[in-house]
Image (cartoon, rainbow, N blue to C red; front, side):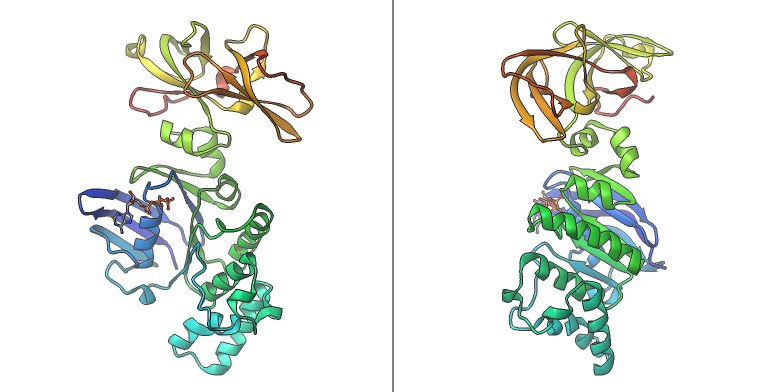
Length: 360
Ligand code: ATP
């Protein structure tokens, strides 16, 4: 068993709080991805699980055993870093063998296990090379091999692909998915990358300012962000956010007024007392559809063609930033042209003054 349980874990650096009291249960064999803006506490949480950072308070158990005060080497965890952290003077084989040597594993077994993980990570041909003679992707595969060679119960990965180019990242994403299937170990993975989070995770944990904002399956978090912080963190390009006033509410939903006076129907439940209150309307770029009488309008300030689809950025009165709308790839657009869009009530999100989403 290698479930990881975190109870009321906190971390302070002097006066600043990197992690507020946090509870989190990671299931045995789960691929959990931590996402959130820079400085939100992802790495600090991961490093405390690894034993590289001492918690200010709270407890960590791994496989049912309390490891809060255990040494990093005594937790059954291994960590893969963004920087690879390979030993430059050692060959690939020696780098991979190193944790086994430290653990005084018999020579014969070391040879066998190094060969097995090298084969799994396609490093068989490179075992005699030194790190400087490897590409970035090869180095990262060596650092992964070194982490998994001890059969850790929990594998911790801190932005492992962020130094690689786009094509290599895509390949390594597949490698991680395969590795997770083969090893069956619990994986906790920190990333900024939306694609990595959406494609690799069993569950995503969205963090903001030292707190967990939401935990859920990637698509659930994408479809129903629980707060403005989650809405801003998940989705690329991000969700459009507009300051609105709630003008009506019924069993079918709420009506809100946009900064330029237009109204939008949102399929959410708001209490009668919220009528007249300020709120934030959220609409994803892919949910805006061209409509001559649509409430969202603006002049095209920027137009991006991605091939299969395009994004139009509209200068819109009162919007937080521009309004971004997704269009079919073949659609012709000229800069300065005014476009209008509508949204279905079911595709809207409405956040109260406290930043929490109104429920469906
Ligand atoms: P990034 O995505 O940029 O790596 P993160 O979400 O991983 O960010 P952390 O590295 O966990 O964020 O940092 C959380 C907060 O704790 C930040 O405000 C950071 O400045 C602070 N912090 C981290 N390590 C230390 C330290 N050793 N001393 C003081 N403050 C620290």
